[in-house]
Amino acid sequence: MSKNEIFEVLLESIYEIVPELEGEKITIEDSLQDLGANSIDRAEIIITTLESINVSIPMIKFGEAKNIQDIVEIIDIAIDELHINS
Image (tube, rainbow, N blue to C red; front, side, top):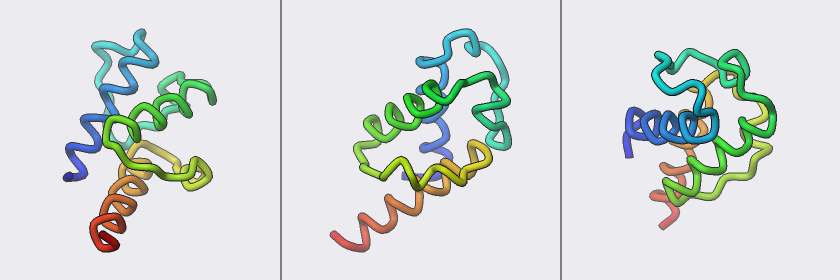
């Protein structure tokens, strides 16, 4: 799965969890917090994305993520590690 595909799944989760953002231009440089997602929304967005991709990553790994790109990178690294270990 490419980073762009991860970003697309993440966008779907954002629009699902925070429907008021539907139609807003969201870029990979945006932060979920700056988009208006509270801490519960942010956790739900990440969990929904992980479930859609069918990968498990401890939420603590996302603690240092500053923006959507950081989230995509964390997921991409985890997917790569899964492929290496399987």
